[in-house]
Length: 173
Image 1 (cartoon, helix red, strand yellow):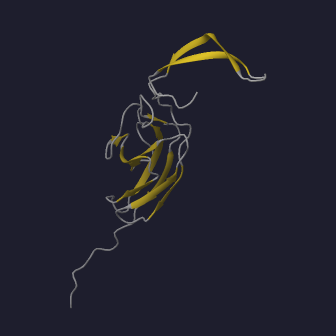
Image 2 (cartoon, one colour):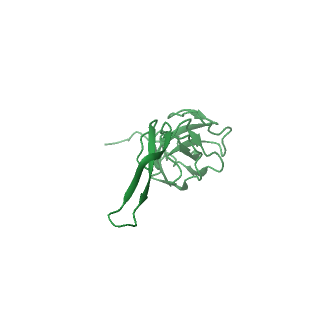
Image 3 (tube, helix red, strand yellow):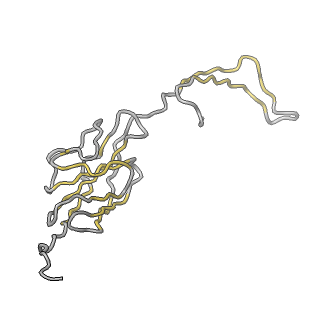
């Protein structure tokens, strides 16, 4: 059965029929079989995504910013992106904890959370190597979430550009 409402009790009546006859089908309407069932609340428990996103790349790299892009996976509703100046995180995301932008996580900072597969940074330090960790997450369409796939997050790193030489005051007009 499809198209049922959540948290609803349904009654099912089963009638015997003979459809292979002239003037059929004919139904036995005496003492039909009766069954009942109640649908669940409609929100299933969260399941850990089966895979991490792929292909983290960077573009528009400047001394102060960059854009990151990656490819989504079908088993995840959202993604948690963490930036760090260290090559690994000291702790990983914890199930049932909702992280917000700029939250600290494992020595890094949350820079993106949601279904988007791109992010923009504009307050970085020049000449600095940054490591990015992207975790698949399920939460908006399930209960007891969010849940994160913490094994083998998508990772990549890049270095921001230098500022170049210092500005000098012009000596003449």
